[in-house]
Image (cartoon, rainbow, N blue to C red; front, top):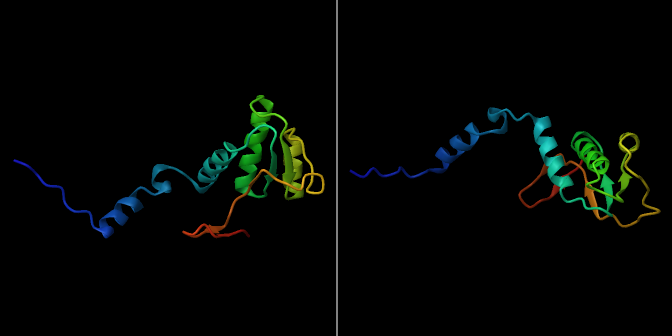
Length: 125
């Protein structure tokens, strides 16, 4: 005897998705930020000029860039920090730094956003 599968209704799908929320599988907001930061660092290549943002997500990215430089997996990176805090963190990790006067073109900038809508418009606080 064949058993049919019930149709998924939007409300059923919402219940399924809400039961699989990041917190239900042990992912804190900080862990999600670290995952996002590490994913963004995958786009950093040797020789790039990289904008280094400020606050929690960017802190994880700067840590990862420092780690990759130390391991020799990245070379000749130039960081452009957006704050004194990021500057100090990058210096402590051995990331070479510069400014926009010396490097007016940035290959990639890494920073967090407070909100992003479906059209990829973002709010940066």
